[in-house]
Picture: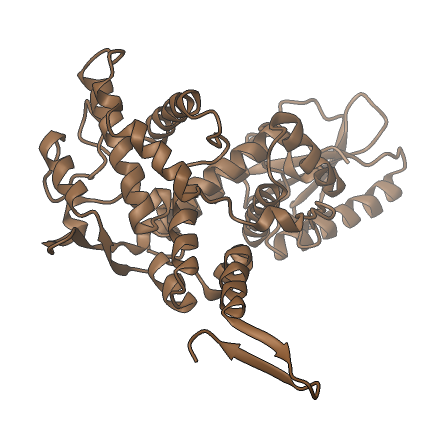
Length: 420
């Protein structure tokens, strides 16, 4: 079925024959052709729908026109759009909705950034000018292969998360009447290998290698200017705080000076009490924590130009705004390349986020309460149990090894504990 989009102004066509039905809501006409045509004004969308009735017979044309009228009226009654919007338009509408959710503190800024990224991949997949009603739902079965063609090492977990976001965008489109309620995306089955859910954490040795190099990187001879020196110092301090605070990357990047409530010095080290604001957290909840290495914040104050309450701790060099992710990751990747050269055994596939995994893993290995770890790191107990099972298994096996199990002469089991 082909629908032509025409403005309210009547098309300047010479109609040899024309008459109305439904009190003028529908016009049936024909021009030089003998085939009858259908025209109906859709006031909700301020456009005409115009289609062929595929017949030369007047009575058949009226019957066909009545069916079309009922069809379009039903769509309007169900709040469905007659004219399909493009994939780009769907994304634009969805992002406006999501932005409002962020402003109303229903979603975090981090989630907004993810949605922007995921839906950008969606546009690359379907084409930004493609009419969404013309996309075969089964086409999305090709999405996993498409993403792996673009990025060969992408994890199935990431693709599954992208598919969930795209489905949410289409559910939004249905609620706005852009799509039929019966339109269901079919991504097929995106299986996530069990080993893919294991969080890759830096080892304590890798962290040591990383910081050995990073702490003096800003003093290296290849530093070209003050801006590069600044970012090299900043990435070093970012790494230290990630490993000592268990932050998500976005949480630390968006931290402001006003969020640091107190810095206290003990005999051995310095602590910082700070708040992670809900709008910056993945779970959209405020949490107040105390972290080691509060001295790092004091150090940043000495070399940063922007240290007022509303300024970001990790600010850009040239202007008073938060450091963008591109600069952050570029300098981290440059650093990792240098560390890999100095320490060939260093795993350069791990990311900044792996420092959060290091924080969680080390606390599990220390035997701390898993519920407390989940609460302080802003995640769920289920997430800890699911993604850090290897570390928990190691702790359990160590506890078991503290007991000696043997059998006496009668075959009875005797357990002797180191503590007994």
